Length: 450
Image 1 (cartoon, one colour):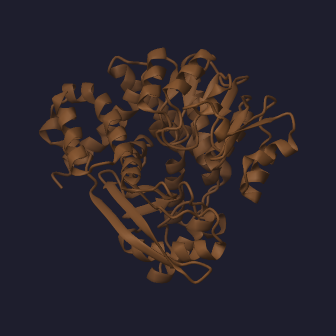
Image 2 (cartoon, rainbow, N blue to C red):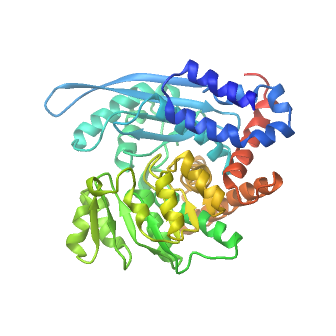
Image 3 (cartoon, rainbow, N blue to C red):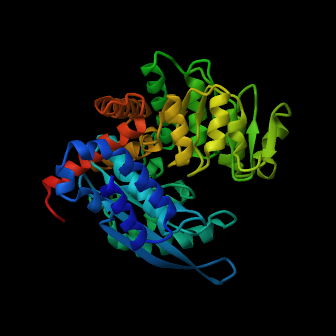
């Protein structure tokens, strides 16, 4: 379709070298073709041209002082992508890989993910190339305070509500929230992922991982199957991976892998959750320590992975949960997963599968849950935190988890129904993109040209 191709060509010309962003846009726009053919109103109102451009891009310098008294400088970003259905909502990522293209890709995906939740939240994302690893608490505090000193003027509880992401957990949210409160004098729900005593929500830490498993559970039930008894591979070792593993055990599945930036663990008996939490949540150290506690497990360093492959996906399984980072699962990995009998993929990370891998999953007709649908539980529960802050209440873990379960069930239902409507009942990529886009696009038309 020249319309889609021309839009992508213009993007590449106006914002060169934003590769992850182009990948995300291409995936969404390509799957929207049947909707655009059926409904000329979206072209008439230039929705495609408008939705791929952020409403606002904020870039700023973050200067801070390290423990040696030296001044350090990082880049800060906040992309406020689309507010047609609610205030901007999306995490803040601190990682050396962060640049404008990463933040734009994440913010663009967030538009449709947030729409799918059925909640009143728009799409945004932020971050910095600051690396928290190896930094002292005081260095992280000084960086977060400096970051918020620039960001605070652009956010608010009904304007833009950031959350955590890679490199940004409860500690970082706390330092940023404290600086926001100092600067504004306001105690309001401007950040989510807060700790429980000062406005956080129970089940928020678990939400992305739990939601990814709930989505897989719905996909399997839709095919007359279940996760019970299934051997599962999980990548990552952060919040998403840890609570994916926890929920898999609760549903009777057996997660056998986890990974970090240095290597992966394969434990045939099943990953010991207590050991994993001790290593990652308490000690914050390398997964290689896992085999010291469990000699029957095997640790493989990244240097020993098969060439051009992620070794996590070499392990035979019936279900896989990519929960680390973007483009971690490529076509070669997909071929091995399918050959070994994998029938379900539920993405806990944002865009963890390359386009070539996704194509193989769709062609095979397996249950494939794209990240914008499968990992939407995190942002959904962030909105539930916003609701609790707005009413000055705190719900029980069971209340929040129950709402999360229903949200993930509804996301699957919306994506599945849209896929069926357009004649591809097993293609949840198409279904999720169309269902998420349609709600935002119709709101943009209702609100006029802006």
